[in-house]
Image (tube, rainbow, N blue to C red; front, side):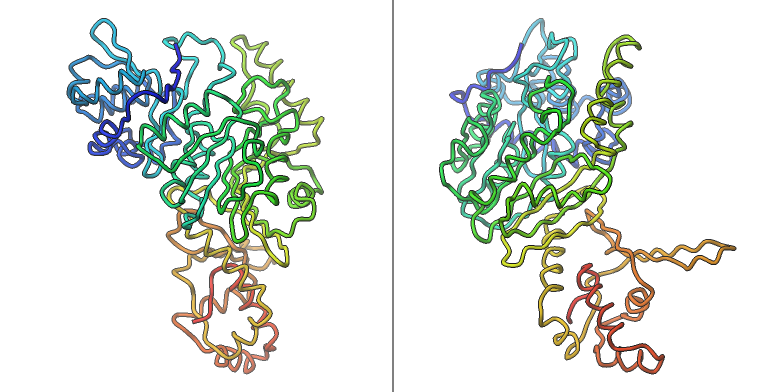
Length: 486
């Protein structure tokens, strides 16, 4: 039995407030289950969670069991968790199902940032749901990609925000906190109802949900923020609605990017977390530029994870019998070969209007908490590095490290190869490793505090180093966000 996500039911603000008060949040659930990140939650580990982490049956244990682990709790534990009015509101909304003295939830509740988001269960194949396969109109639970996008979104105040392929509406819910109006769009009617259900549950009046094909319901409207976590999997057969993006994986995300010039407001930002198949000798940015069809936009590509095509095929293979599993892997591998993909890359794509379009590619660790300000600073560093007046500003002023820097140097012992160095700003939620030249490394090491560029140039001249080498190294460090004008 699935939840209809009836938007005419009661608001659930009281129940959500109660859950927040007992620590039902990303951090609270992780502490209780012994997880570093809520993305580490696994179906196969449910017995371990129950036996080792939820033995103490307090309100938080009951909430995790009921709303995340898809389990049942006795009515007595429900009384401990919710007051009677909140129980009735959840039952009237169709969330709770009572039978034989125990209670189950027909949907899961996912903590994401400051929000609590209802959606279909993460594991629909579990016996109590009655499914052998994922239903076509399944609304995706909050997965890894959604959390990455939620953590990396630029949280500027905007007049309007749009979340395409909204699913549960999680990104529209988060945007509603810093947008005058948030709009969620999905072609799946159940997903559109789920998004509206979440807006009603949270008591949000500035979130609208539209059912339709990407930009089709929007007319000529433009938005200060556009987010999207589209179906992107290059599947040999299109079986899972929220996941599969055609045999190439690009059928939907290509249309999302192509529509940005018509719907992104001046000064706005569009961000997608997706996967792109990568071919040898074809930079990803070339494909994105083609999709934009010449629109003058800056593109930032943040590579978060790379999976070889073979491993990707194995990870998507299924089948109860081993022979069936091998056949499935073979079909996935054949499709990836047909597309020319050598690897699949998880990326965070950021688009902004720019008079002089530029593209930047970085490699980062996936975000473990709010990383929006870090990404904002990186984009600002790129714009500063492209400022024609930067060199004059550097010559006449002072420079300083932008924060504590972690420096890693490596050398092959017994070999003539020179040492290499990498640096990153320490303590970040989404650290980026920047390779350094010898000059860049030396400049970073000598910047214990603000330093006048003239003094750096004078010291370099005594060592026989030309001004140009120093200024180029400083400009490179500015671009990497490691150094800035004091």
